[in-house]
Length: 260
Length: 260
Image (cartoon, rainbow over the protein chains, first blue to last red):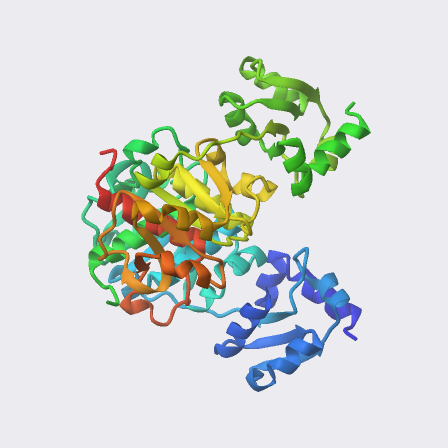
C-alpha cells in the first residue's frame, strides 16, 4: 500500500511551484507511461495496477527508481483526472540549452501568452509531427508540465525542446541575424500564397487577444489563414491549435522537406 | 430563485437519452450564449447572473421563452463544468433534412466512430471554417449535443448540419452517384500530392482504430498526411481533430475556392 506522504507528494506536483522546485512532473495513462519508459528520461516513480505492471515487466528498465503496485482507489486519490488510467509516473524534467543554430537556421515556433493547456498540448504535438523541434514560450504561457498539457501533447514533449523567455528580449537578441518572423494574425497575406521559408520563427498569439502589441514590430511577414468563399456564414476563428496545425503543414509542404 | 425541479431538469439534459426525448440541449458560456441569441434558434431557457443579463438586454429577442436571474452558486449546481461561466441556456435542437445535392455535389465529411467530444467539436469547428457544411456521423460517434462537443465547437454547430446514419448503408446508397470517397488512413497517397476534388466525401476514422474494415471497400482515394524527413524521431500520429484541419485546408486550397 502506498503511503499517505507519497500520495500527498505526487498530488503536490499538480502545483507549478512545487514542480519547479522539485524538477519533477507527472504523466498519466498507459500509452504515455509506456512511451516514457521507452525513452531515455529518468523516471522517479512508477505507480500502476498489478496487471499493468506485470504486462510491462520487460520494459521496466533501470531508469525507473521506484515501482509501486497500487489499487484503482489509490490511483483515483492521486490522479488529476476524473477517471484515472492504469498507471502514472513521476518524471524528471529535462534541462535543455537553447542552441542559436536551431533558432536561426531552422523553423521554430514562438508562443505569446497561449494559456489553454489543451491548445499548448496540441501545438507541441503538431510541431513534433511536422518536425519543428524548438518552441519558445512567453513567460505568461501555460506551464508545459501542467498535467493537461502533458496529456494532450501525447508524448510529443519527449521530442521537443520548450523554452520560456521574455519574448521581447528574445526577438531583440535575434535582430542581428535578420531572420524572418512570421506572425499569424487575423489580417495579412494568405498562408497559401505567401512565400514561406524553411527557416524562421512562426509566432502564434493568445487565444482571444492575439499577438501582443509590443511584439508586432518584430514581425517581418504577416500571415493569416483565409476564409473560403462558401464559409462566409461560418465561425469567425479557428482555435490556435488548429491554426498551428494548418500553418505548420503549409510551411513544411512549401519548404519541400516531405518524406515522400 | 430557480426551482429545484428546474435545476434537476436542466441537469438531466447532460444525459443523451433525455436530450433526444426532449429535443433540447444545453450551451454554456458568455460567448456561446450571445452567439446563439444572435442566431435564429429557439432558446427555451436562459439562465444568467444579473450583471450578464443586464448587459445583453438589447439582444434578448422574442426567441427566448424564459429568462431566470441566477447566482453563482446556482449556476455551479447546474453547470456541467468545474468552473461555471456567467450564463447558460437550454436550446431547441434543429431538425435537418439531408439534401442529396449537398452530399453528392459538394465536399462533405463522414466520421466513423469518432468518440472523443473534444475531437468531434474541433472537427465541426474546422469544417465550418473551411466551408464544409454537412457532416455524417456513424451511430457510434459521440453525440453532437454532448456538452463538451458543444463547448469545443464554439458555436460552429449553428452553421453545420450533422446527421447520424449507418455509414455502410449511407455509402451503399451513394454508389450509384459514383462520387469520390477520400479515406484518411495511415498509408495512402500524400494529401499534398493527390488530386483533391471540390466534391466528395472526406472519411475520418476512430481515434485509435482508424476507419473500420466494413467501410474500406467504399474508399476510392486513400490519402494520408506524410511525415517530414526531419520528424522521423517525433510522435507517431496527429489527433483526428488536427488531421481534419490539415486535410480540410488542403482540399480547399487545391479546389481554389479561396476568399482572396
